[in-house]
Length: 268
Image (cartoon, rainbow, N blue to C red; front, side, top):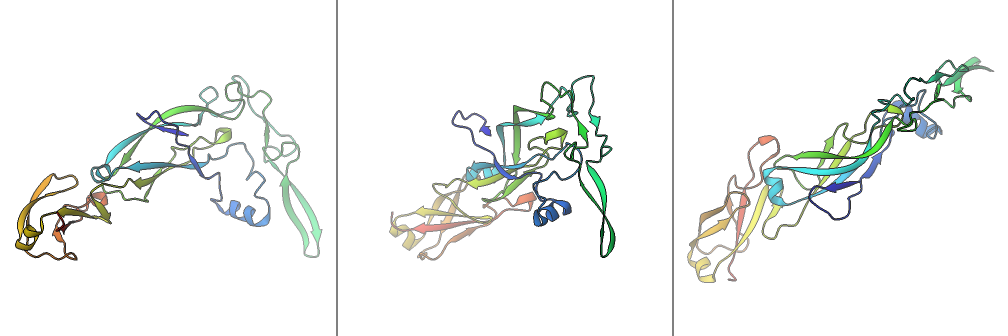
């Protein structure tokens, strides 16, 4: 789980994306042919489980870019055994039945001739090793749970529904396995004045009917550039808007900005 920095409200829970997951050929085959519940191979190390973290942002922060701080409760590598699993001064013992392979070869005869296959070693249950003296700090898991602070850079121009991938920032894998990835799912809070359409912004300005009819100059708010004096032409219709170039949202990777569209409401 995670706490937003500076917020004392309830913690935000991480949502699991997938575990060691169906992320390689063997896992796909296991999922289809009934071995998905078995261990994916010899050894104890497994990749951690990917997770997502929700992040609600104000439109101004999405325009300027920001850095968000999270306090995350997660699994990290055990420093006592450095992920080696065994207590200090001891080591894992290789299984004598499979020679550490975790699998035992066998040959069977069929009408096609001799077929060589391999099955999980019953003695070590496919692990290839035994752990007679587990690390007392992590109990032989290779990881411990702790709270750590994570700073996430939010680029200017990010949009609602986008996902930021933080490679290797997820939980450490069991058995000293590699860390998973953490994904930040971005959502925009509703803005009281501006609406967003891609890289463009829209704002409504209320003016007296006589000024709309005869034309005028008005102060128009922008999202991050202050107020601008804008000439309002006479007799603007409801379906028309003034286009102020380069006053919209920044485009990702610094490729310019969108536009600001000003809609005039003559109901003032």
